[in-house]
Length: 335
Image (tube, rainbow, N blue to C red):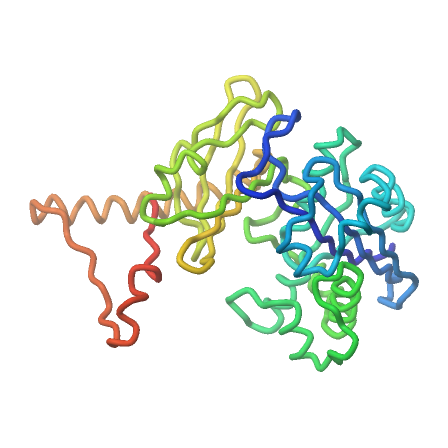
């Protein structure tokens, strides 16, 4: 078995995501794929890099250009996504699993495959960032560059946000930690199922107030990946810090699990929406979190019934220098 460590860069549209014929917006259109192939003993075998000519978001976003150094001329002379994907598939060989740093590359890859109407990507993927965090005892997400520095990986000649360079750094990290053990013990943030269960991915930018997240139609409604009808979240419940879960149900295509992940970007928040097939593992995780949410709700109602009025939320006192950031730092528990 081979380990394919890959990274991608993608273009973004100016303004809101553009609705596409396959039923929903495209979070990002892939413009570069970089990968490193490792043997079953984590020895280097080969490396690849291919640029991709965009079809849906043809104009290169200035922010993407500044971040990646990719130019419009390079993309205009590059193969379309189906050809680039075939190059990547051939590089992977027949027996392989993939590894990425973070959990966004694989959903975006599958989203681009859907946009072009190509055969699904079935390979199993492991998030090396999660493995690294677990082995180092970290709770907060860590950037690729930070992990590389912690492991003493030389920073010379590394151009981060270049897909091939990022893949090479990720591959070297995999060689310096107990990756085989991490894969053997691998558990995704949702439980005993992996990215292969993902059927939809979407990013929502510019959320002003997390306390009103539940009422935002971009969050409440998600397109069914099969019939393309808008589905309303039945209830949004906490999973962990910055993460929420919701169950969606389509009359024709059954249930799905929606996972929301929020993070701050300046004075606003961004939200990723990942949609999973409903199966036994998903149902177990959802029911566990629902039971916790119901218990907290019942305790809250008991306090209300006992006092006759809604208790106020206590706020921690902040130092004067931090006073202006209090509102931005508060994140409400959505139930």
